[in-house]
Image (cartoon, rainbow over all chains, first blue to last red; front, top):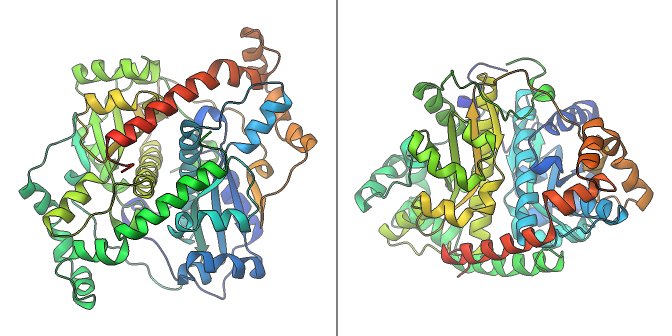
Length: 249
Length: 249
């Protein structure tokens, strides 16, 4: 691993179609990732590996065919999973009370921790990775495609492949935007504007604003990328999906 | 970083009281962790650093004074945060529709990703880390202590310090328990029992069972560590807390 790996890493959305991840490397990544922390050592997650071309072709439309999905060598769907543990409890005459919000959030935490561990290990092995946030938007349909049983919900998705070219970092907020000391810092309106200033002045963001005919960067997010109506309809589906999977009993 | 760091890492709950993490090292860890992936580059999290002894003394009872908290050199409370982004939108005449479940889950994902990135960077710097799962159990009281505003909820907590001694790995499930190929694998009851066999035969687990006077390991989890009644009362509090913080409008 390069000394400055963490400081220089970036998401990779375009993969070399000629290079494939060997099964040995993939299993080695997953095996090491299993050493990531997990709630009470319960390992409340399942990683579903998609690498068969036909299965990939069925899955990628549920990620809106974004190039990071269609061009991926491997797609990993990481699920919050209290099913395996609950079945083991039931088979042991133990009263498994994991059909509730706390249990879902614990399993989701485990799933995201292991997802990020996979990202780091994969990247240190020379692979590129990208989270497909679309996993949440079509959680119900992805559950159906992957045959997920009760108490299993997809919460993170990763595309993996060898990078097609050099990676480029994007901008970030200044450190003090996201790090507060001892208590949550009550910023003034002026402070908030200042925290986002370099982001607004970042050239590619200015281009986004212009291309989309918006007044400012925030409106690109609220009107185009993450609009209220979509957030609200997806939220409604998610509540129903959590209920269907038995997490809101 | 050692070649086999990922395969050999383990959680550290006991810290050397004589060694302190410098502010420079802590900031360097946080600065690098900010390069972790984040939803739409929105950085929907805030890390609250607790290192003042008085503030620590106020916080650790909310973690049930577990030794990993009272003995920590630094405690980091990592919050799902849509407040900063929403304020920026409002100041930009943009309609921020992030008061819903999807937005909470996106922010929680960002928070857990950055938490795990902090863990990895801290460990590669020679520190020991431990997730304090108790953050969820007292989310409402921790929110109050840290002055969290609307759309900010604590979702992960880390204790950090130099390890007091050598670290020991605990057992894990076999790889095929948590990795499924192409679809969720419908295991039989016998399969499930087999997946948990090495866990049940692991000597420290057998000791847990004996010490607690239980019939088997699963009952240690369901009757003592994560009992139904506690899960259900915490879940009720969490729903109310998410509502209070404006995430279930």
